[in-house]
Length: 516
Image (cartoon, rainbow, N blue to C red):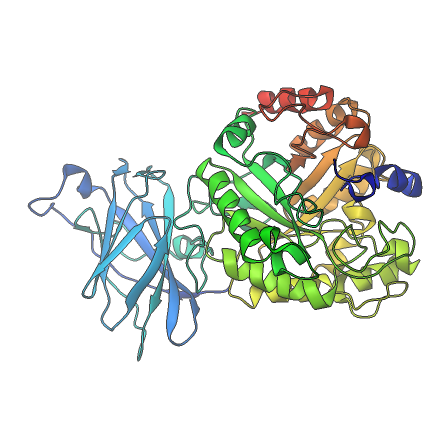
């Protein structure tokens, strides 16, 4: 039994009392539509299509190509195979969102099992990394199912098709191989969208344990992390899981048992991410517990190591943490990065303005005795690796306060940024009037992901009010938490890892069942 003082939600009562109250080089191409199918091709190959070829990252000795195929005809492109050739020495390194191969200069991509057909009017993006030397000249001719691919009325690829290419590229292959059924995500306006530009709204659960078990020397996970436990999750009709991480465990720092830290911890997390993705679940990786000695207002612990929630992440550990995590998962845009779980610098600095400045810029912050990593530096760490994964940023007051989020939003070169909001019945902003005044304006500008929601009464009255409101604005949400805890110690959705719901979980499960 883990110590109550170390429980990830042991601060609920205290907080309740305290708060009470993408850039890319777009390469134009011209292709002529075939008038007849060559011998040996299928009848379906006569369908018209267009191709947009995008180089989204070129680092001199290698690059990432994103290719978007659009069915411009009236019949589906079934069991599609894309072909093209390079004029230089471009050499395939790895590909995803399709099965990539190369023979000489000729490159072939066959449809993955989860996207064998492209419907009329729809698009699909597939990506790969290549090495090269000399000149990186883009290909200008493409075939789909053995036929030159172009639109019979508009031979060149449309700018809109090129612009919609998924920015899910990076100078590294997916760490878990070709991603499974979980869609690659990017930001379009105030929505998360997949590679085809279709809106994706996340409805999921938090899976706590990987933030605390390792530092408590009990393992990597709290409970099972196998197929049976994931099948129980998917039976609730969720499409996302948020996995909290521990800075010291990932980095193998500060004396954490090596069995549960460093390479072993990373391997366990990667395997779990792969399992979740294979089950069609997007994954949010969250930096939850970090270093830094803090004993001020709302302190969760007195130690300097990552054994509790700190008001802000530490620059010494959080920056290398995100550099490592982003390097590990870049190229797999089914994974979202939640840069810091629940900032509460406002409890330390004593001023809303100084708190937001600390939140963005970090450095020396009033009331915090360690050098803080601001959201801009964390975003820089991620983007510095070439990763284009969507990042989530929570506001002040344990991510419940988004009042100045838009004013302080960090600069991100990819535009793949979402606001993270946490909503509990005991938070200051827990009424529809506050949601409409403070949260809706943010959701109108950027995707809103409610990374945590819940209530501390083992019931679902609060969920019954906030979930319909979130649905009305098209926001994503994940409920805390898919763990078998006593509801008295914090919101727990289940009483057994077979998916048996608690009273709180029953309300959430019932709501999920009403969604399309």
